[in-house]
Image (cartoon, rainbow, N blue to C red):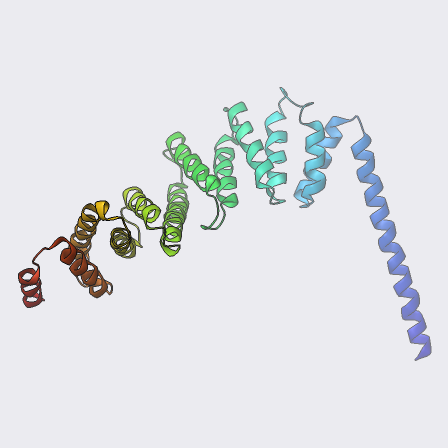
Length: 284
């Protein structure tokens, strides 16, 4: 038993030393490539590293040779693989920059459509969750729209439209979250502006019912807390918001509370709403 353990220990040390040697040789070979002035060799090694999914080394080598191969028959291959190397490292800022530069520089390359698609995809991959600033989301939508204009016959049309819809949903959610923040903070004046803008920009929002109710409540609360000289107009705004909400969502779970704000607003204005409410009750 002790002999077996000894043999295993010896083999363990042997393989550890072998692994170190392999790593050392590999690093030495890579160092030689880095220091070499044989740019064709560097290109071949960069491609080999790329194919081996060693994208850090590949991108370093492509960075070294990109300027050297500018204007040659390999230029588009070098620049495209350079962009892909950064993309595969999840560096969407650098890869997006290189893809956009490629598409602008090598319009006749067989890789140009792929570069345009990947440039848009880098924006898409950089798009944050809805709570955060959405510049990358807007840039992604614009890039995908431009892609469809440039390549109307692309096989990726359905895929691209799916990305655009997903990105737009994120903008809708961002607008809703931003508007609701003012509402939750009881900043009703700002809430009214934000909620109206949200409805104007995204009329088909899945949050439309809730947004319209929050708009009604914001109008009422603003009126109720206003100075006397402004209350009449603001309570009238609340009544108008109620009519819009009730007409569109008569069966809403918010309708009972909405009617309360309507009654209180009408009472302040001295409007006689009993006949109207009785008719409404009979119809329901």
